[in-house]
Length: 264
Image (tube, rainbow, N blue to C red; front, side):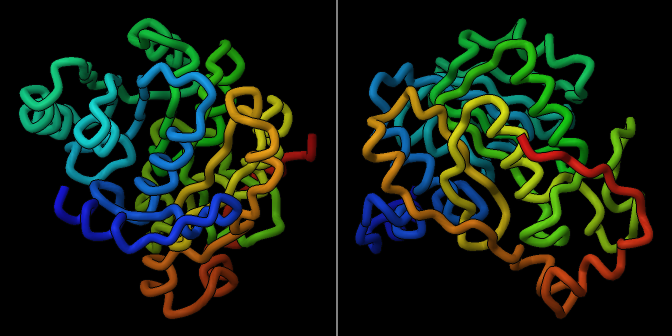
């Protein structure tokens, strides 16, 4: 909370530039600020979120909403120990939270539907370091319509290629390749997916980790039309680990199979 107060106070918000919205309280990068600002611009807020990949609650994309904004929500993770820690930390601070241990795949997204209070939460965050594209596709297919959708992309695939890893269960990025650079989908593949469902791309965070999409019907159209977000960003952790840019990272995994995602 202290980190959120300190970093949010430094902002000089420009409604057209998402990079000015960023601050980090519980998020790894500036996601808290982007999510928080978008929530303030919703036409009708339900004050409910869903996060898949919530971890232990100390570093994710929705704890700020749960504690700072007092949202209700559903926090899901595949690690039972992390879920127990998350519940122990947050349940006594916000009684409107629900916690679940689930290893989400494209075939069991119905479990999310069963647990969720709403199919159109204000915020849906997805970060599972693997077949994220397929899970997002399945969720949208069964009728989820979040107002704000936050999803991790893999900058190692670069700013232009529209690709994702093939679907495989189970998927562990470090077992697939020791670099950990082989996972997820490119930002362009995700843009094609969300375009097909009528979403608008907003931005990626400045540290190159998450992409943000909105249902334009949930916002004032003039606000959405004016946004000038970052189309691509280098993942700062992968850049440090590779000591090079995305092309150097991709060179290490280019022999591995990829699935091309067509434009809408």
